Length: 288
Image (cartoon, rainbow, N blue to C red; front, side, top):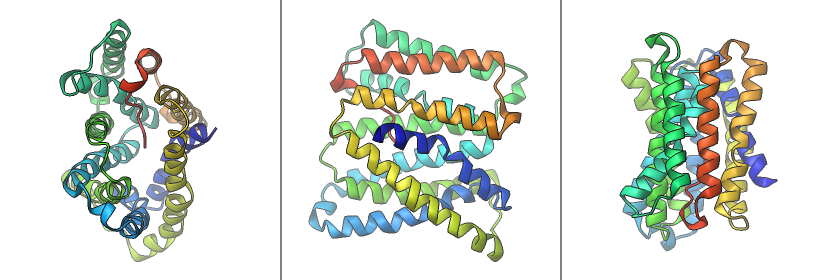
């Protein structure tokens, strides 16, 4: 239940982002504002752990940058493209993780893993080739990059399991904020919020980050101590379901076309094949 609850929270992550955007806070500012508070909380946790948090500092920085930029890309994707497309492009993560595992971790691929790879890539093809070329936008690219960055970060976590979680989380939170600001600057879409906008946004941003985002991360980390990675990854697919239902109800203008639904089915199916048929010690479940 904790995994379902934690993943479901990420399925509605787009709601506070769009709310802050509705206040007139444009560009990638909503992503940055939702992730400011965790920087200080995770930093306090790291400081409290003393010397253990300073172990493997370089590796923690690299992992934090990769996973932090993954979240920055994901948050920006939810702003610059439709909710479902952003979510589905992110959930190609197991496919990228499998490819990285084959090339970098010397893992072996069986038939189901090859089916998952080609199924996921076929789903991506359906998603990006439907309609005119203009339908493929910068938000779609961000969603795709979010999964790739997370897959690389996850591979590093597997290769370096002794890196302290508190240190990684601190660097990750800071990287989300910095990454979001850099994306906005790169797009030339970084309008500074007014004082009144910030005053209206901060209670929501602080409340969501402290009461929803951080607890969901704790739930997922705690659950993985008791459940197999395959089961965790399978239960986390609830994020796609929650995102689909919430977006279809609250954002009827973002409904997928038939070709996009076919692509979505192939991507979700590829994830399920990868999770169910991959040996427990080789699974890379996408974890927010």
